[in-house]
Structures are given as structure tokens and as C-alpha cells.
Image (cartoon, rainbow, N blue to C red; front, top):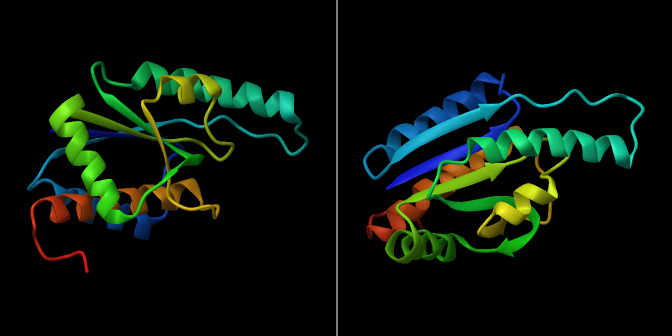
Length: 159
């Protein structure tokens, strides 16, 4: 199995990069992780819904162009399905068993995902109704993927 994480916007904070690297290293026992980081569009101080949509569309095109073929696509979306850790583990196992050997998770930029990206997705996942910085979301995502593999392998970690 291979997991691809597509995210918009480069991380600069060392503590986030270190945390992500630690979980990617731990995950190497179970799966291959590929990280694709796309540039985000500049957001002007004075903006409107039309300009915001244009930004999401530009970022969305780059996201869609980066999705590996034959991959099950999961978009992180505030309007998506909320799962607990065991349910996410089961979802990953089901995808691996019945759908695809590759899963792509998508984390949008600060304005979210374009409608085209959401249409291209096979599943929409919501981690919380709270708003998190998209940079922090990547760390939370890799930790939950790691937790899912530990759960699916009946190993201690999840309590």
C-alpha cells in the first residue's frame, strides 16, 4: 500500500516538520508515504468571494494534476464525514481490501478546496468542526494514519 498526502502551502515551522517526519518514519514499517507540497496562491488583504474562488480554483487545478492515477482520494473537508480513530482504521482497511492499494489524502490551502477537487474525491473526511491551521492538519493526519495502522495490526498505541 502507498499513501500520498497532497497539501497546499509549505511548512516552515521546525516543530511541525519534526513531528511529521517522526510519524512518516514510524509509518515506513507499514506503508510508503509520499508527500506532495504545492505552492499556495497569494491572498490579498482586500478580497471577495470571487477572488477567493479564483484562488481555490487555481490551487485545485494543481491538486488534481498531482493526484496519482488509480488512487482512492480522500479530501479533508469541514463538510465531510467525521470518524473516530477506529472508524478511520476500518475505512483504510476497507479501501485497501476492496477499492485500491493507493490512498491520496488532500489538505487544501487556507481557503479550503475547490468544488472540482471535492467532485474528484471518493470520500470527504472531517477531523473536527473546529478550524485548524492547514499546516497543523498535516501533523494530525499523519498521526491518525499511524494510529490506524497500529489499530489494524492489533498493536498497542491506541488506548
